[in-house]
Image (tube, rainbow, N blue to C red; front, side, top):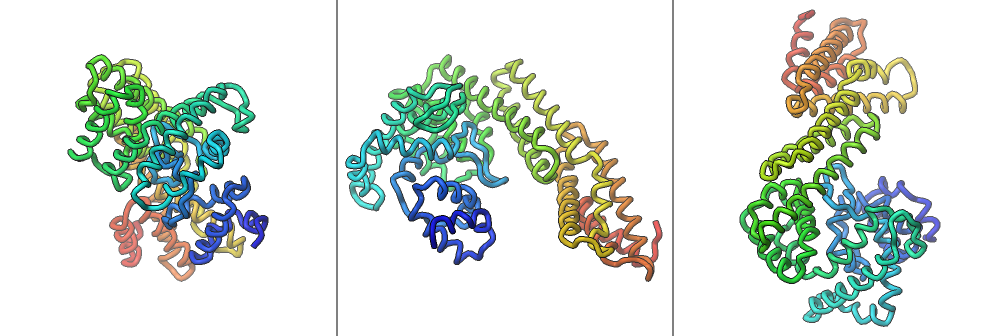
Length: 436
């Protein structure tokens, strides 16, 4: 198969059977350096992660290993790192690192890709040399300007990411030790052995590389199911710092956490209400992060952070109200019968899927309604929608003139919104002739 044929497949690769997918990935791997191939791999990356394909080791992957936990999240359920590194930045950076180190030097590091006695020593030497190369490249990248070597417009996040990569590579042995201690990722809860490992490695770093302590803690957080949880335990951790330095680190990390929550909230507001479940998932995640962050900040009692967190909560309130609650009854009820009447089947299925998505989102948001001050409004919308669906189900299922498929679809929607017990009760009532 030619390269152009592989590239032309694009997102169709997400749908082919697993055996063919694995075969195509093998072909893509052989031409991985080409930009078009990299774009194709970026498209299929979620499926690569889902299947956990064992891809062949390369120096590029070894280069990324220390900071890979900071790459942007792929799936909806994946934890979002507190300090994100774009894959596009890494893809632009690696060829420059290769050129800076030189092919002959890189060839000497290839044995590090195989298991063996020299592997650890070679890996550490490789990462040290890469750290120097990235630091040199970062010096020429200025925020607000276009970087010709990187072929990217540099912004503050990208210049920060370059500096972070250089620091992380310079402490790669400590990062490898951290990753081994906080495994497998994501870690749902911090246990005593996790905290002890973070403290032990952190104390070592504070003696020799105190400037690397913040990014080290961010890397530790990125291995947790909820990265902000680490903040709540940080105040009591002994990282070998003086009290003033510990307070400064805590405030710096708190600022990073709050800024990320604000960014995610703004992105959710701007995304619109196309995928209601995505909105509900984001809202749940943001509320959990807000609660964890607020609890962690009891130690600092910072009024500015309190105000910013309150603004984010108000933003999430607005997002749920406008993108999940608003017009939920009309949107869900109107989809009943979408497959009846001889219309476009594909369009009808899409409308029905969208309504089911909306119904699930409505039920999911019930778990955070109290926290957002939306309990009354959500209960009212749920009752209104359920009543309309019940009326439709009664009409379609109570007599021979009705449409059974529409009736059962209405019952299905009630189940998604109010739960199976309520749906069964309504169904039993209809079957027993109860015309409520």
